[in-house]
Image (cartoon, rainbow, N blue to C red; front, side, top):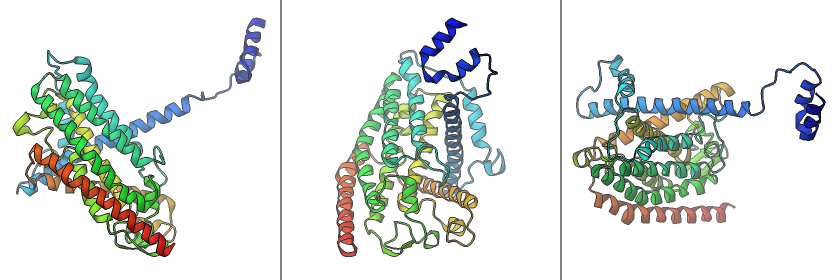
Length: 391
């Protein structure tokens, strides 16, 4: 015992618990310091996985119903009320389906690619606040982090196309690489317009700047707003910036008319051709989660974020101030805005024909990029003029 006490003394001041144990003191029921953050990480990842899964499940159901009604049919109707159990049936089928790996494929890259794609969107979703007082990471550079993490999904797509040892997969991967390079620029540049207006990269702060005005008239999208500081003159370049962001997001998420990386009529299924089972579902989980995430980001910087007539009722200065109900209504508001944006993206898919690859590149480089730069220049001059006049 004397030898152990000497060794404990050499370890320094962080061994009080060990000293008490050696002295015969009863062991206190303490949780290790490392266990608390590790438990929080597991809980956060579990919630994020649930959110991504729900986005994919509801997104696939909504996609089928929207396409069905646009084509004058019902869509899924048999599994549950109006087919709402169909996504669960599809999930069970994918779990039980055989996981095939082509003989000539690079097995390591083939297996890693879907995991990289899914982990990228999980990291990006962690920056998205679910309510003013409920978030995973309150990142000061939230939008920058989201754009950085979502762009890494392209690496997984290219990895999947290369590892599949299929010309159709490789063609799809190369199209994805070219498309992302063409549309990442106008997407990032167009988002500079609301960033200049909001004065922050943080999503929660951007939402707080649009409070008041009965929950709707303080949004940055209006040319004339009425928020917590009274009437204010908005930026007229916000509406064209929102249109540019929406078009760039369609290309970024591989949605029609920019679904060239998949193009079933040309490339079988593009980079997904050789995938099956649960790995195949990872790519679609990422797609629908990315659609929801980008729509939420657009809601935060253009369409009021958490603010709506529902939240105004329960916020400070509203009719019935209540913090808990305010957070609940904020969560409902942002979810509804996100899925409404997804609905518009699905509407576009089943309305417009697919573009050719040269038309996709032309639109990105010759039109969207110059227009986004003009929007940023005009928005900057407008904000400078307001500052010079108003102070």
